[in-house]
Length: 207
Image (cartoon, rainbow, N blue to C red; front, side, top):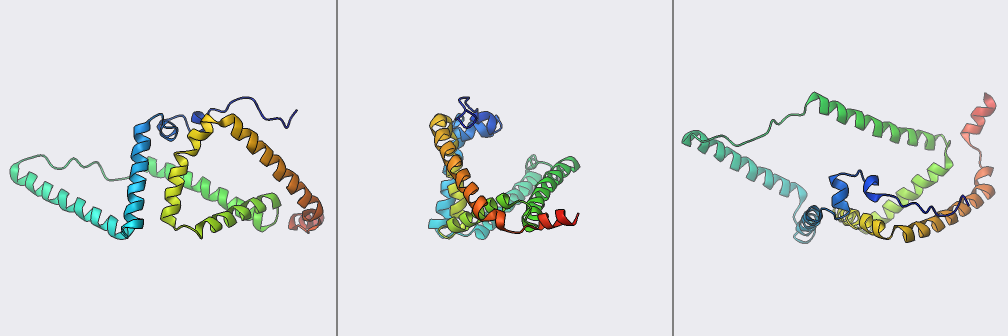
């Protein structure tokens, strides 16, 4: 009974945060989804098909922006018009502290995972990370970074809404896949992994 598929439906919107981002990803704010998808497609075509580079594009956009603002400010001073409405271009101490704290949590989490993998304390985690990195490397051999990011944007705008619509059927398939992978992992663990020496076991014996 414990391995049966749960009948309760997960709220995808709440899982995504329940805000504007969730509404865009689920196409409830379809204007935002259209803008993001159209912008990502335009950038991908600009850099991939037209041969534009990111550095030259950013430099040209910044150059155009600086020129426009400079002549706007000069003409405003000559014609007694208001200056360009620029916001206060600085990061507050509060926001900097939030960013630093969030970055510290993420970095410490990554370092903790790397520490456990290096000492061989969590073999299951090591296998997950190794398979994940191999999969990313395998996919990366077919696409460059820009195409990889574009595919990620397309998937983020399609997978959540498809899962929200066909959640029950997808959960059934995922549950079967999870049970199969757990069964295979138990076999490997019993026949191979438990016979390997672990540093943690040696430390326990010394203690």
